[in-house]
Picture (cartoon, helix red, strand yellow):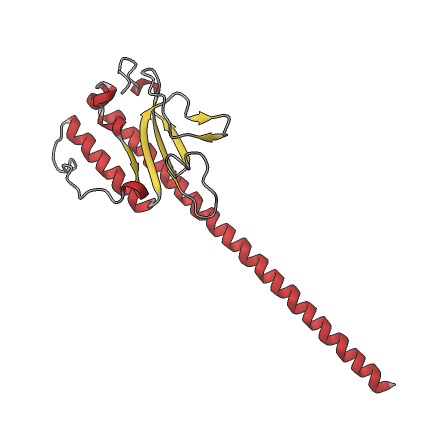
Length: 200
């Protein structure tokens, strides 16, 4: 009897060890998944923060270049920007003037700004897109998402739109037309709009 009891007790101990190992493995898998999600969330937060800085700098640069912003929309170089890093590929080699070392007119300053924004977008968002346009309805309430399309109304504010593709999630608005969903839409201040400009 004593030997049988010992064998039975030893068997139960082995099962308990196996259950403990299984619980430990499940816990490790859960911790790994949590860390992976936290890493992805941190990366998205970093991308969103950089997008805010890029859009803010673009807005300030456009406000500083008053002659270019006062031109009709069809001739405003900033409003022609629609750069998709994945579809368009890397920006062309720098051909814009270096306005940091020499004085530039408004056209050259705009060309330098646009070249810098394309390069920065490609560097940080290889699957990103940046668009500047006049739009009074950048939010689509039906899709509950920002949109790439612009109404181009002459009285609409100038809006900087930035988006990037997320590998871990299906594409949202703009998946068919532009690939990357819009993550950020930053309108310029009302005094920087040109109510008299003609829509392109």
